[in-house]
Image (cartoon, rainbow, N blue to C red; front, side, top):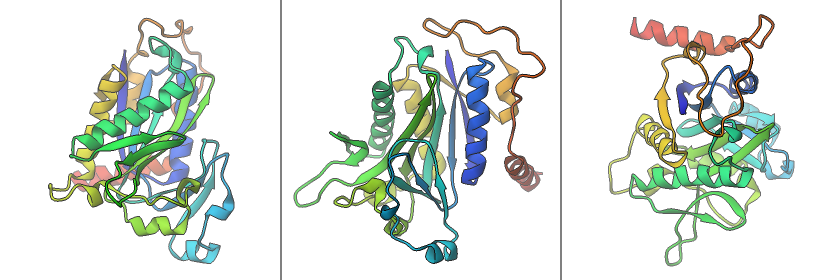
Length: 274
């Protein structure tokens, strides 16, 4: 079994939602295996199922002036912020494909473990905190722990979506727009703020570190793909504990719908390197 890795660069939040919906349906049909999307978003606030809009501290006028979009979505958790300098991960995993099969809590603990190990690669000690999902720095002296990564997932018919956000070089002042994850008594931080005096890793380096740790923690080979189209080039990963094989797809099956905004982005990237 393997995890297909797609590193998509910066894409807007609505495009990522559309892409996730397409990949989830393809995963249900077993036309693709497990997929990990790593990317970055323009400024956006997302409200999970358990969110309280009072945790958005900025008014609509300020958000509009700063170009911050707002989306209500079906993941767990409260309000969170995504923006430049943040590594966002969306695993589209079938939890029944792992051996032993993973439950929701086990899955979230593994996501935390991936991020804890990735932070450790840069000399940053992090931890879990009971009752608070996510990854936190270790408190020391009078300094309280700070949240460096948020996690919010959705699971339907055993397949995951949404995921995590790791602050790499994120402008932490943007979190002043909200009460992050509804937690008012703890601050947020980033790799950039914590990594000194070591050289600051690039966003791409951190993305590669996280991808590598997914392979270790989920005990799967991680295969980097060049494009979304490559996902349909092979058969789904199989192995002990995987769902039974599906019949061959018919014409009316869900196609791989690549959002037009993402196609445009890829065309622009190709022109830069032409």
